Image 1: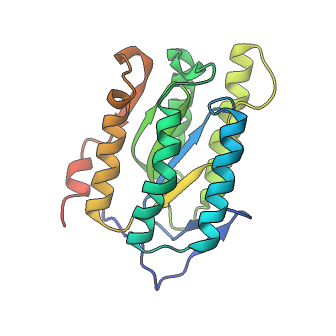
Image 2: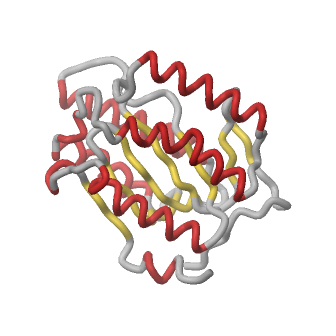
Length: 213
């Protein structure tokens, strides 16, 4: 499998409103989304405002330096809060994580190529390559809506399960891709999780795919 990377001169697809998502055909994406109750409401409002103000000052698409600055100023704050394990953390249950993992693998080789993922107690990191004709927005809607319905039924509940939005990043180089892989690998350790509290998966050839630079 040959990996294509984000190129600023190639066509970009945009969807979303205030904080739009960007997609470039068959370019790897690093995606994070959380449970609906994973962040306190007051903090979430503050973070959304900071992120919105930041993107007004730095409109997408971003170069690598701007992306790194965003990760430092905004993304790192969000990740630290998520790793605190707030909310009910229902993804700590193995049966719930199994439903999510099954949904991720169902789309593999149909709409996208899975690279790796980690399912944490209250959020999920996914690294994948959408097919050239696939819509990232539709992929995410399918995964989130299907798993929410399945898990709410399992829990005997109704209402919002996942957050409405998700965070995504286009990958620009093999080196950046490998950093994402290592971030996913290391996330459970950073959050001090036991082996039964998360699900980590990666392709057997992941090291070969992102070797270089």
